[in-house]
Image (tube, rainbow, N blue to C red; front, side):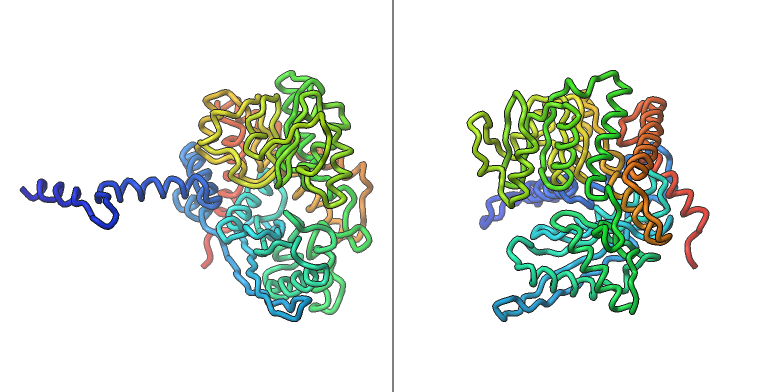
Length: 451
């Protein structure tokens, strides 16, 4: 009787919404699934859970890795050029410093939010661990569209943001770097602001600086070069001639533009590229040099005129038939809604978190090789590390040494990941996370939990 009453109550219809409580519960479940699918930090935690099951990770360490050490949220009041006051919100997150100081970029974007920064900091932890760098994972950002600011407003924003996070950054604490919509000039302002507060020049507080104040040669192209070295190593393993491949690059900023340019110079056929406005497609190949010159004059691809190029959307570019797809924009680009339409043999993740866990499962079933972000795009943090140690020792390397050291580290990491994936019959992503998490687990075990 009681059970029947409960069932009847569960079917009560609410006139205002015209839905049942059963439907409400289903809706909540769907909303939760969508959250896990698209929220970057939920994605990162899901990736940890997947690997933890495979390696029998200590449940305590699993929970440890699914939390960040600290999250700082700051208000950034700025006097605008017109005399008005505008307040922006900024973040700096440390996911783990168990293996060394935090390391991670700072992005300026109107879409920045805390869970995104947490996820990016988490992925940085695994990236540094995989490459065996003595660094931890961190990330920062400001919720702002920098294109709407004057140079003076941008400088004031950067300096005030630096002052607000100054107690959680430093050469022995956390070393920021460029990311989306930030670059050498912004790193120079951060370095100067930090140095003025400390009373002496401290170039090691950030990486990605101009060469004239302690930056490293090869840093701006590092992520692109790293992508090339990893892709070349994979092609050698599976007996593919890279020059015969048709390649699509989503994203035409620092990462996407550089890998497209490098591959173009190596004789590869780049058939499509895109920026935030959409993309250009030509089956016979694009003139990447010409498009980069157009971009560098602050133009968008949608405004480029060439009768042989077809304009496409950012959604369409992901499903173009090609051999190699390089998502190099932002996270959550390949999801369960489009994974069945992906039409390539290899996905090389230039962005952080471009593929959701559910999409990963679909791509695995379809036999598409995915080279994960924590391996594929690790060239940036690798050369940032080189810059950091050059600053500390006040001794700087030439470009040949930078690229040789970068190739050695990335190819060695790739070989480890590829070998483990074959040995354990797992994807490259799972193998990469297995290696990274096991190293972190050992470090946590050795250090213990304070107090």
